[in-house]
Image (cartoon, rainbow, N blue to C red; front, side, top):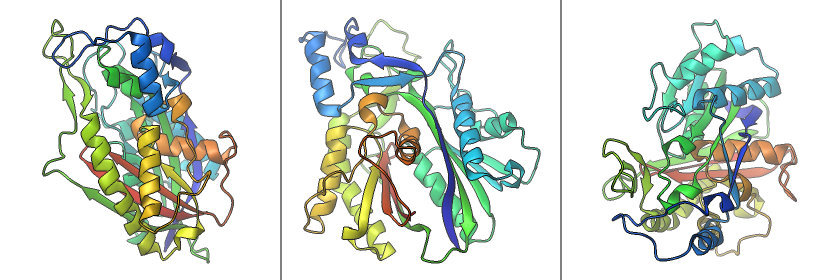
Length: 354
């Protein structure tokens, strides 16, 4: 039994946060000392490395579950299904609902249950649950949905990735300029179509021996802030090196399992984490096959949307499918590779045929 994506939807928040909006931030080093460079220089260097020019933040009246609901509703409409026929709702996130006026994460009930409630689904056999898998969470949700379908436990699954990272940022940390908010969702259905349409193969891994805390919750760099407040933190260099050394191999493993030749891959939609890192990953992936990276193989949205964690790939798929990414398209029969890396440290990849 094959599984394929029959509907896709996303929600891109309305508040635009541009790089120049950080000019008045007091950026500090980890030890609380001032950075000895003007903010203009810090921001220019940041853009050169990440490619990010601006990002989107959710309006104060919307939480992560709200964003997830808005994306889910669009995906269900795009699939043209009766939402009461959904067997599973799988929602990937990292921080739950963090209200704009609170420092607490709220995950009781689960965000998936909240989305099911907002959708108005009455069917008690539609099982809703959350997964925490770092930035690769949405892909992992799709992998789980396919497993349910293959096992005969489901025919229709809704997979959502939603995050409001703007609520857990340390304004004194330069790395906080990377993060953004957003949500993406898809409907995964069983299909008997011939020619191996849909998910062809997947792979996933978790490295925790040395890598577990490359991303973590930590104190503000401002030593005058309360010690009980935590923010998203990362060891950027370690993540960069880990990703380059491990993600290309995971992508190759997935592609080799699918039986698809590398030359038949039309697009690679990789987690929008950092433009230079993503390009380096894809270049190393092709190097494993002794080939140069093809031009236009990697659609990007990070320049305008930033890194919205679990939402980056489903949002990017939706944008490409709707012709919203310049000079990028996906056509019937195209082989597409999805890949992500993030907190855990986790990696996964899917080979997909449209």
